Length: 229
Length: 360
Image 1 (cartoon, rainbow over the protein chains, first blue to last red):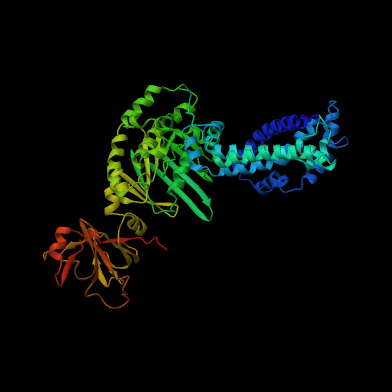
Image 2 (cartoon, one colour; image 1 turned 90 degrees about the horizontal axis):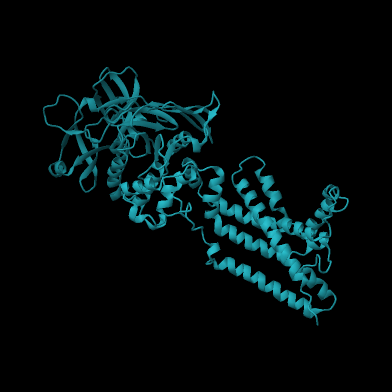
């Protein structure tokens, strides 16, 4: 039997791209919200967290309405001759939306753990807000940020519902491992479904072990020196 | 160099209204916890924005609500020593001290940091992390870090409260030495009159968000302006009093009448007598001599506090708690006083204060 590895390649590609996007989006959203004390805080925070608890099919449906052929974003993109729906890009979009709250919530928790006076001390020493972000906040919150990234990666890898709705199941193009499992099992190819299940199981377990172990260098607080000397 | 501060702020039902003009080299700000001392420092440093007012250091305007000036903390050139020092836990001692110069954008002079480390005797700790050094060492790192950016003014927020008692006196001496070359002004906030007195020449007293007293430290001890000021500067014996004549007051709680040195016009006020200013009667005094009855004693290694009441106090209105006073004496006097059946004390008229009542 010729085993088709393309779902792994699609999955990996989607997972890497979407985790990268989630990393930067989540980090900047979390830092902004950690420093924002305005009256809309509760609302913005709720909206950013919502995809975590919504059924993926609801997220998928909303995305379908937005980026579909007749959706506002879909129409806008078609003006530039870009069609995102049922493409590899749509899988990335759905993965980002679904897994973003994990990154955001975990990171904001890590930022809020930082003693405000530590940031104030940096301010009185002349550090600009962006220097404070890079030299103080990120290093101190690093264990939380690393854990958030690993969690998001695992979540993205397992994304099924929303992805199916917006990017479909096109083998070799948009079929990710979870989709491959579903359609293999449905078609009676239990051996194929089993192999993919074991792979997902192993990778996800690895990610969680990594977080829990915490002894890896990239999970430790930043030990770099304040400058390059 | 001097400061000119007028700050108004309402925060969670707490009204904060401070007026302060001073050009002392080292100014102590004394007040109980919750009086607004940290708030004052944070307003000066730009970490908290006042509702209204003005902050001028020397001739630099840092904040002026009327002229819409509000410099960010990064541009204020105000050094801040936080209560728990707030060293960067992820950086070693050297990097903590170099933090200010290295983030300020200019090329920084490594030699200058090394010299500062040497002066603060921290060279051997350069590679250690804050968690790996003692509290006293942490304080010195924090002080060196604040001075590394050469601030115009240095704010010390309860600098000794996180230290063990036996270290305190030593660290106060050390700080006086460390700051001896510093050209700028220093403001230290504390709730402890001992610390403020040891370190500063001028002391301002803050109570419930207002400055109630300010002056040369000896003046403050001998002549506090109000009852709260007396209490905050450590006066133990405070009770309501009434004016009898120009130099005579009655203190019902204590059941005595006291002769005072100066005259006052207000009919109701507060009597205050510092526990250390009470004397043993020598027999030559003409007034303010009282027989006392010792109720309890509190002993410390070198001093003894006698808790007493006046034995021939008029019974009216005197209750157990209010009628008790503190008298603090040295061990040597305690040896002779101990066991004596009746004791006579003398309260010098200049130590019998009749103050404005400003307490609730």
